[in-house]
Image (cartoon, rainbow, N blue to C red):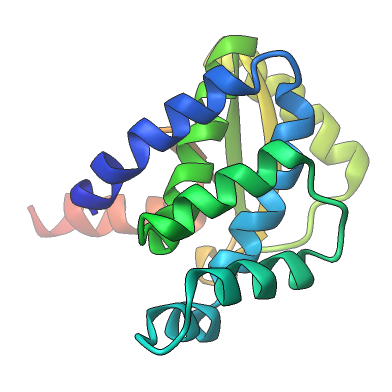
Length: 176
């Protein structure tokens, strides 16, 4: 995926610079476009040589079902015209990283074996922000195979306190 990241970087940086006055507004429509572009059927449609760029744009704009600002339309046309629709999800990820870097925050994914109540999640977020020394945008994903505990991923940092990880550590210690 390094190639896809290399392709996406200039688009993400240009979008970041162009929308610097309204990053939050841009983030909302970028996320909407990312969700749409991630659809495999849309990718197949866009890859069809009999389909024009205008048809792909019209389809995405129709599915977006929201009034896209002119900047969003221009960005989407540029991505489609350059045949980079498959890179749109990576562009959105890199845009989010740039936006978070400017605000001094980061995305954190908490993998848990069980659902976490909102009060417990707020306490966990506070603890994690102290641990990682930055503001975190926390989201939760269920992973029953963890058995218990949590696994937190912030960028390239991982904090794994799950039962599964501890069992793996014990297994390694016993077989060593």
